[in-house]
Length: 303
Length: 309
Image (cartoon, rainbow over all chains, first blue to last red; front, side, top):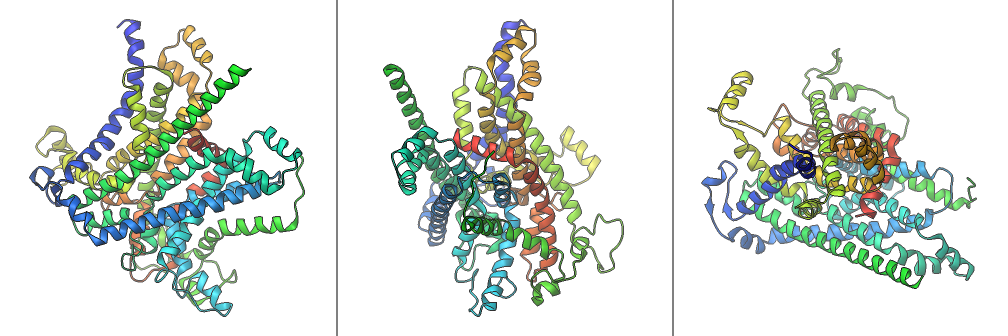
C-alpha cells in the first residue's frame, strides 16, 4: 500500500466505526420501524410472518380519540414548559448577570436538577405531591389551607411544574452565557446615551441574544418531546389519559396492548413532528450564518 | 476581581433560588435516612433519629453482614447497580472513542459522503428513545440473533446454557450497542466544535515530523481537546446511567439496571418511601459527584452544544 492511497482512506477509517454502529443500531431500526408500521405486527411474531395492511395503522390512529388526546397532551406539555422555562430562565439570567461572588457555585447548584436521573426526579416529586404525606400538602395544611389534589385533578400542571424545575436551569445557563458574550461596546454606548435598565434589556440585550435564544428554545422543544420517565414515575399517564404523552402511549401500546404495528406508526407520527422542528432549527442556523457572513462582507467592503 | 455590592433583596432572591433548586434533592437525602414510620407519621423537619436501615435494605444482596431487620432480601439493588455501572462505563468509553474519531474526520478531511454523514448525524440527534423502542425491541429479540445450530451460537449456548437462539436482547452488549448508537450523534456534534479550535499548524508540524494520521490524532489532537472529551463523557454517562425505557425493553432478570428497579418498586401498591428514596439517592450520587467536580466542563459542553449548533 503506498502512502497516497493511505491518505485517501484515512477519513473513511476514522468514520467507519461510527458509521457501522449508527447504521446497525439507529438507521436500520428506523427503517425497520417504517416497514413495520405498514404491518399487523404482534410481539410474538417475527416480521416476515406479519401481514401487510397498508396505511391501516396510520388511518386508525388518525381517527383514534385516545391518540389524539395524547397528541394534544404532548403538544400542550411541550409548548407550556418551553414558554415557561424561556420566560423564567431568561428573566433570571438578566437579573443575575452581575458581578457577584460565588456565581460559579450558584451555577453548579443550578445544574444539579438536570443531571440526576429523570426516574429520581419523578420519584422526588411524586413524594412531594403525595396527598397526605407529601411536602406541599403538609405545608398547606399547617398554614390552615385545604390540601390540593396535585396528581389527581391537576396532574398535567403538576407534571409541568416538575419539568420546569428540572430544565429551567438549562435555559438560564445558556442565556447567561449568551448575555456575557454580548459586545460590551453596544451596552456601554447605550448607557452613555442614558438608556434605562429596561430600555437596555428590550432594545439591546434581547435582540442581540435572540439567535441563541431561538436555537435554545428549539433544542428544548425537541427535548420536551422526549420526556417520559418523569411522567411515568409520577402519574403513569393517569388519571385517565390526562398526562399520557405520546412517548408513554407508544411504550404502552407496544408492551401492554401488544400492537407493535400501531406503536410503530405512532412513533412515525412523532418522528415526523420532530423532524419538522429539527428542520426549522437547521434552516434557522443556516439563515443566521448567511446573514453574519453578509454583514462581515459588508464591513470589509466599507473598511 | 472586584465584586459589586448588591441590595439585600437580591441576596434573598438568590437564597430562594438555591433553596428551590436543591430543596427537593435535600429532602430526598433526608428522607432516605428516615424510617417509614417517621416519613408517614409526620415528624417533619430535621428532628428524627437518622438510620441507615433503608440503605441496608436496598443493598442487602452485596452486604457482607446480614442486617437484623431484613428477613428476606427481595430488592436486588447491588446487582442492578453493578449492571448499571458496567453498561454506563463501557458505553461511555466506546461512544467517546468512536465519536471523536468520526468528529475528527468530519472536521479535518474533505471526502466523498462527508456532507451526507454530517447531515445524517445532525438529523438523528432528535430521535427520542421512545421511537427506537419498537424497532429495537423487535430487532434485538428476533433478528440480531445467532442461530442455535450455528457455530458461535451453538458454542455460546453450550457454554452458558439457555435454549433456542442466542439474541442480543437480555445481554449487556445489547443495551450497550443501542446506547452507543443513541449517544454518538450528540458526541460527534459537540466534539466537532472543540476540534475546530485545534490549530492546524500543530498537526502539520507533527505530520512533517513523520507521524501517521492515527499518531497525529491520538498524540496531538486528543490531548488538546480534553475539556471537550470531559464534557462529552459526562453527558454520555449521564444518559446511559439514567436511561430507563430502552433498558427496560432489552434487559432480562440478570441485566436489570437501577432505573428499572426503581420504577418497578414505585408501581407497587404500597410504596416503601424510605427504601425507594435510598435507592434513588444511590442512583443520583454519581451524577451529583460529577456535577460538583466538573461543573465547568459541563457548562462549557452545554454552551458549545447549543450556541455553536
